[in-house]
Image (cartoon, rainbow, N blue to C red; front, side, top):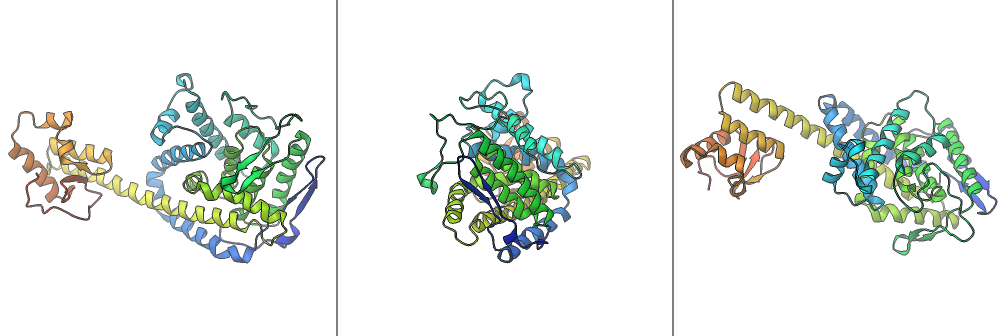
Length: 402
């Protein structure tokens, strides 16, 4: 997955389409490949470290987390209002339990991601216009919207003009309006991508370029952003990237102003005939890949540490190094995954019930034992931490808890 040089010069891989009403539309790499080699190599290096990590041990948990984060990210970019926790709850619903539009939006994205991943896993899969229409059909299924036409290309009546963007993100753009032009351009995009692939242009360049031009075509009334990111993710997944392609949506959300602005700035640079007009968007994408892969790598390491910790506290109980009360405290800390202020902890019903018939001396002794075994830490602010996270300012074990 390291940077490779195409078998044809990038400058040759230009496709101009003369539409009926929109005028000429040009697909071009629009990058200086040599200037992207280092960024691509950094992505490749990060990917190599990631796949060499103990991924298999926590793959199921990571996949669940990535799905929630990815659906939340791509949905929020387009105005979705569910929080990340609400997104997780929505994705766990049976279809018969869906009551809100926002829940349906999240479930639709999940269905589209699963469809995309399944397609990408098939040997020899290639991008087609039908695949794009199917993605849109899944993403917009049963979502009430005045412009919701699942799987159907936009065809504006003369009385209605579609505009994209806003002044705060580089301006307002008028994409093709005529359905026949849009269909022709979508087919041309698929064909052009095939040329890039045949010329051995790396997927790290192809995927963002297809994403960019798809959004400029803007073929649907609604859902273009979600579909465009899913197409990009599918191309990357087909190239062997695991988890990262869909998790990339979170990077776009976290850098949403730059993300939206780049579509306009690259378009304007191309209209003015500037050299390498798409360079900035591809660089943005590559940095997002690097950051996302490294974040996933860190998460894998943390999940493995947590897995080992869970085994450690179970073993401590089995070997009678700790008692049932202490194990309950550690289990609840583990599930929380972060510090718990002792003052708050003691007010919780489950904690209070552990010591309902015991005195404070027993409670302090239990806590000191956990700290001595380094199964839990207490910081200087009197918060209790699970043993897989060590706070910067520890309270001495000899001290009694406040």
